[in-house]
Structures are given as structure tokens and as C-alpha cells.
Length: 275
Image (tube, rainbow, N blue to C red):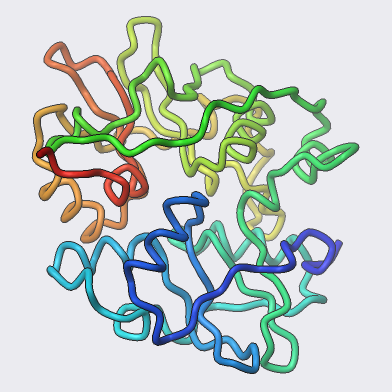
């Protein structure tokens, strides 16, 4: 299968002169992880990500233009690139969630991790690789801004989060991530304590790595020793940590060290100061 068979067409793009505030609105309103930056002829100039937007916030440059913060010369693939190669690159370069598809210098689509995990009408790429059935999902209501200055104030409460346990099947976790457009799921024990985090990169099938059999459960696939943040940590510190360490989301712990929610880059970009 080729990139052209799974890519998203009709991509939303921005120009290099677009204000970051406009790019931010597109990202938060549509839950994008990145926006390709193109010129008037459709040539790819760069890509602006949620990390770039957070970096501008941390540096006090929210009023800047896209060209000042976009990632130039991003990794790309062609329409005939094999999907296995696309998945391998996304696993190897953990920050990459979007790969522009370029033909003769022109942007013709993008491949996201969600495209590789998504369940089409019949069977998903992951299902074909792992031999597991489709999963029916209910979609929650749209995101809404939250007001506050701490991780606990703007986080998504655990009751509204998609979470996994050690025995959750990899195929189920992949379907949840794809349908909800999430980057990671916390893996919890029976007392809501953090066992690890399972991300899109953990779940992407990678036949080129030479590793053993693909994991079947989240306990086998998850990253252990995951970083978490306490509920009373100021948002400024959370944002700086996400920028410096390239976190996409962090579990939020209550006073008893149980997971009470998740805070993501999107939560920070949507957050509103009180009053």
C-alpha cells in the first residue's frame, strides 16, 4: 500500500505571513496537530505544529507570524512511498505526527499517525497487520475552553478521558486514539495509579525495525516510567516542560498520586486566564 492510498487530501494550510493567533485558532478549533505552510502556488515551505505555537507562547511572541516559528524543511514523503516506510519514519522520529505528501514540490496531501491507525469502511491497516476486529466507538462532545492557571484547572478530567489498562488490546487502543484524535492514553491499574503511557508511536506497526512480534496488549506496548504532573503545578511550568521536552500530553496526579486527568498541548492552547 502507498502513501497516496491513506493520505488526507484537501489539507488546510496557512501562509507564512499568517498571524500565529489565526494558526492557533485553526489548530485548537479543529484539533489539528500541525498545519502545512505553503506559498500561493501550493509549494510546501514548512509546517507549524502545536509545539511551535506553545514555544511562541512561552517566549511571549503570540503576536508573531507563522514564518517566524514554523519548522522549515520538514520531513516529507512522496505519493508512492510505501506505508511501511511511512510508519517506520513516524516511529523513529517520535515528534513527527504529520508527514506532508509532496509531488514535484507541491503539497498534495498529508499522512498522519491517525491515517495509519484509522479504521476505514472495512478493516484498518492495523487490523490487517495484527489480525484483530474493528471496534465501534462513541464520539464525545467537542472540546471547550477551560479557565484557570494550573494543570488541574485546565486538564481533561479522568472521567472524560479515554484510558487503558494493561490488558487492553493494542487494536482497541489504536482505534480509540484514531477516532478521538489523541496522541496517547494513560495506562492505569485498578486504583487509578499510573502504570505507563501508550502513544501512537508505540502502536504503529513497524516491519522495518527487525524487532520481535508486534505487541498485543497495552502492557506490552506502553512506555513505563512516564512523566506526570501534579494538579497544582502552574500552567507556565507545564508549557515550558512541554516545549523543552516535547511532551504532547501529561497525566495529572491528585494529592493521593492517583491519575485525575490528562493535560495536553491543546488544553494549554485553549486555556483562558480567569477574569
